Length: 269
Image 1 (cartoon, rainbow, N blue to C red):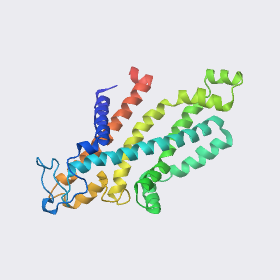
Image 2: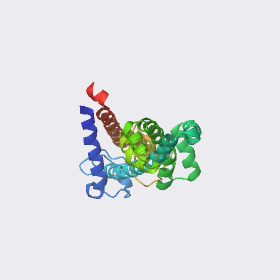
Image 3: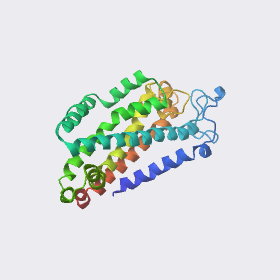
Image 4: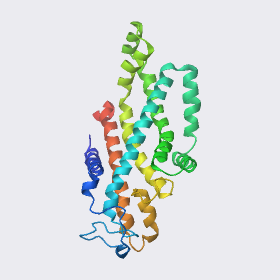
């Protein structure tokens, strides 16, 4: 793996540790307001300054990491499981099942831009953490399903799969014992990139007011609250923006490194 991959692993590890130990790392209560300290510049008391309500930006970013990772991990796990099951069925059985799933169902979801579909779903379901995760899962599974279908179509023609079929192994045994373990590698890369996409989507929807409602310390909500004061107090928008950028870059670096590591042709090159 290249140097950027290791940088991504380090940054992602720091974000995970910050999310886990957020109560210990935060220096102030995220909901405590102090109007006398509105837009205070970074100092020894407030490391990243304060926002328009006098709340400590550093503490809100620390707890915001917990929200972002909760959304990202949940969306990746749920979308991955659904996508793996549907993609495996489409690729393994083929025929009219594959035609319906990959020819119609996949294309219906892919016909709409992901973020616009998420906005429509959240606007219909309403704001909230659970509804945001549900909307991102609805639009996220199809990417895993497409990758899994392609892998299953390739692996099911391998000699060891044909040998298992000749020995009388059933479809479920062949699929779960022989095909899935040998088709899962690209899904690891997809999951890392999907993690970055989920974090960015959560921040985007929260920025638009369709994600996690205030006063929850979402990074996207913090940027939305600070954007009109950027010319006066740029630090209020700068720090949550850097947090989003570093987190998304970290998981993208990890995904690119895993793709290179798991692909023998790229690893040789």
